[in-house]
Length: 191
Image (tube, rainbow, N blue to C red; front, side, top):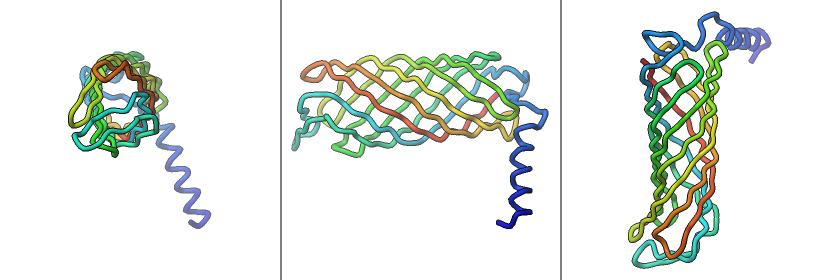
């Protein structure tokens, strides 16, 4: 880019951040979303600590390595000023051996606003499931994460998020634990 284009581009980005219109999500109240829906897609990398599992009829393997997978889901909630509360569903389809995880968490979050940006710090706790073709395990899980959302319109947000996950499962040969990280892009509608 030429210096003049770089300067104009930089000024445009800065103006988005200092515009007096804050990240006023919600149609009816600038500081509250009576209801919001965020959809997300991304990647999860998890380490499942388990004895060798027979998840399919033709193979068994030890799960002591990092497993990459595709994560997707939705968050449905309500934001009241600084605080938000939501229900979070996430499914991850791991690349190896048809392994998947399902998570249904309650979410409590703090929302920090800076003009058209919102930084979300959240804690999620609830049901976690892990399975394959032949076996499933159920348990408890949680995640601690953050997200950064930009509001181009009062009712629309786009952003990215990252979280650290942990879970404990029963139903496999022994108690099984998992730890991992999830990285997603997200889009939300707010009312």
